[in-house]
Image (tube, rainbow, N blue to C red; front, side):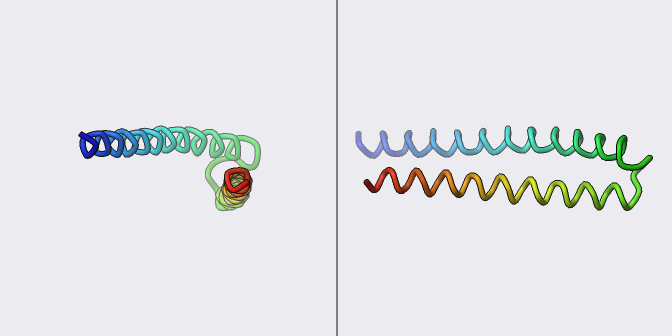
Length: 83
């Protein structure tokens, strides 16, 4: 009975992670399109190399900021758990 409970728990955990990753991908693609449209509209006309460079730099800064923020939150949560 305990093995069935563990298997079910692991299955649900894995399915939750997969669903979260899937929705995260959809959200990322939506933001990707939005940011590209914004840059193409306000930075330069069309999809020139300059607008692509601005897009790449902007997305890189956003990715670094989000990763840093999540790492900091994770570290704070671990410190609270240890206390």
